[in-house]
Structures are given as C-alpha cells and as structure tokens.
Length: 78
Image 1 (cartoon, rainbow, N blue to C red):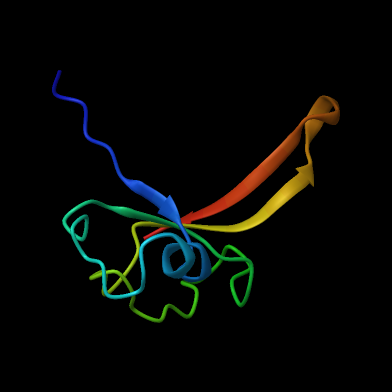
Image 2 (spheres, rainbow, N blue to C red):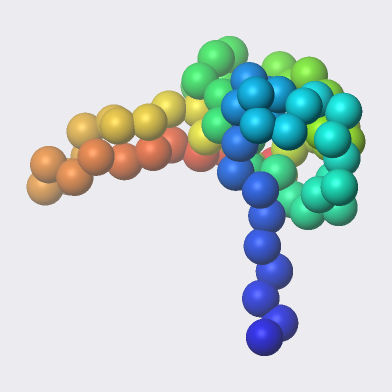
C-alpha cells in the first residue's frame, strides 16, 4: 500500500514487552513516549534502546486540556 509506519513506545514498555536488546524494528521511526525534560522547544534527553540511537517524534505531554474541552498530546518532531 505504500504506507510507512513507525513504533510508538518508551524504554520501560519496550523492556517489559520484548527486552531492551530486541532490535528487529530499529529501521522504523521511533515515536518516543517520554514525559520528562522536554517542554516542546528542544529535544528530550534520549537513552538508546531497541536499536534506536535517536527518536523521530517525542510525545512529551499527554492529556493537555485543549480547545473545546478536547484532551491533546503534545509532541516534538526532530
């Protein structure tokens, strides 16, 4: 179909599900769910896992009250 896809996870979940050394999907873009040191203006502090040395997108906040009462996730795209 020509649709590219990526992996949405964080280090803790990856470790729990497949183990930190599992790197079969390292060629896919990582959408890293991490609410830590990023405020949306800069790149978060990433520690490699699963064969990824970096992320493509970081979700740095979730359930932010947006317009019209809709909850939003906030992301940083590298």
